[in-house]
Image 1 (cartoon, rainbow, N blue to C red):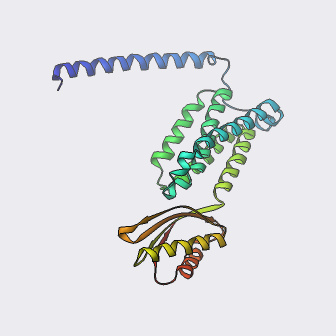
Image 2 (image 1 turned 90 degrees about the vertical axis):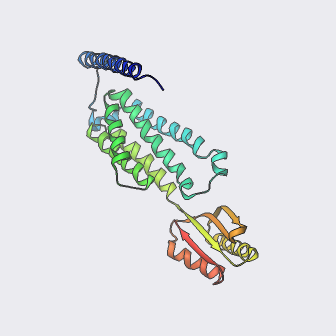
Image 3 (image 1 turned 30 degrees about the horizontal axis):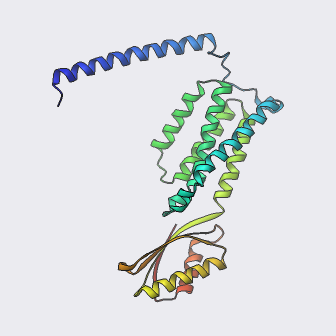
Length: 257
């Protein structure tokens, strides 16, 4: 354990250095604001609907969005990640990666093209939404952050940027929302009964264009855990009825989404 005197001395030195660094940062920020930024005048407000006449910026925002989606997909659909999908939350990872990538790209694009001070606004919005939001669903949280970014972008007079971000975000949400993930737990009186239940569930999924992601048999508990996806048009209640009709009354099951 460090001596008390040495610990207090180190703490005082740290505080002093922090104060000096903060003072230098504030002074540098003030100088840049007064001089119009390090790389030229800082344009926080955009040109409104005249933005659509800027073909170069339109091409840049579209190219950046496509590039960032491609890069996010490399991680979202990594073979190791796909092989290790075990829970429902693993099924929404691709959509979360894509939407967060869009948000990050939006922040960088606006900071580079329309003023670095916007970056502070983005971080503030993200912190409020992530840590002060009452929503428990990760998908809802990222979508709320995204629409907040859209509102900020329109408010800055950048409707063209907002429209392209909204279009790409809409496509990501639509693709991710075409299927719904479910966890199904089967429990029977014997291993053979549980395995037969798995075969019945596979048959049901084939009939409704569903897909089994993973199944895990626990022999000691005579139970089977199944992770699967089905078309979003099929409601949970209807799916439960199909499973009950398919596996019969012998097996107990629990379906959750």
